[in-house]
Length: 463
Image 1 (cartoon, rainbow, N blue to C red):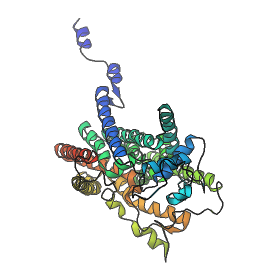
Image 2: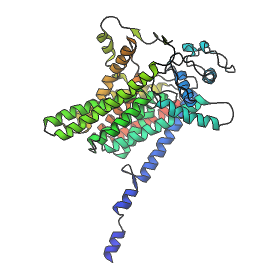
Image 3: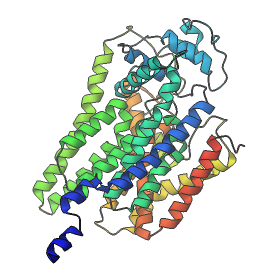
Image 4: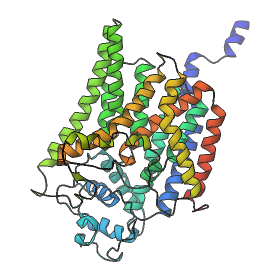
């Protein structure tokens, strides 16, 4: 009788397992996810609605790509923006106030728009555009009144942001961070101006934070959980690259670190494990190459022969002298990853700028701080190595991509090209706080940042 009573007072292992999802208590995971969702939807909606003008980062072409692919067309060399996108561009306005054809017009005179109204971003892989375009079209068709494709596509960015926050939370939990610190780190994502602005505009930078968070999750899967299969990391890499090639940078950084780990293990005679890690790295590289080469080959034979981009020369310059000098001239711009940002004037404030400066300093130092507070052999050191490699490598990858495709270079590699590495820096910051027991300072800092960001985005404070 007593045995039966004792057994009934404790949940069985099967019952406990049913109460957990992804290794997290179900109630906690649902609660945290709900908070993430509210933050993502709230901030993205504020930014998208308070700053309706199309962004300087080619938002019109990204919106057109999503619109075209949702109607069964893929832009190619010389493609012009769809009349509906041109009309909505006129209605939204442009970030710098440039004059556009009237909003009531048919939107058919593409040459009257910046960039001659051409969709010069056709070279990007199609996954982001397909997902965004199809969901937005369904929502747009279901709403009464005039089409709102661009606005709805912007609001859809909240789902990309929510996914990134949730994945980052789960990844840090696997690295051993407390759930409070993991949640705080996830909340830092939308408090970074690049991530927030990309999530509230139509751009293939919107999945960048998700790509970086997935890389952290894969690193934890491999080095913490010791799951050494190559197929899932390769699939994740392929999906990230299919949204934008630069979104594969975090997984490429993971692959680079895994090669180093494999060499260390090989020298210690752990040959089988070293081989499996090397196979994962090869799978990551192969997945990136397949997406890049495959889409390049597909698009190279489509569109107008001899086409020249209407924005060539705006941001890229011809190489003068040694290509090596030009390609490596921007190598350390990743150190200003968060500090270099753009926000529309409606959303900026002195307090928000101050918050970002403090965050940028801490984030840039986070990998080195994590190395300093951990001992040799700690798994967090490999996380710091991945973050450092990502910061250093993405400017060179950008330069190499531009040089090999156009024979030119970028004198300035803006921070949005490395946006996918931001979750890595945040993860290093969270693990440093975990190691040093700095829960309260980090939670307080995130709370202050959330208040400043929310009030700035809502227009309650201004310059």
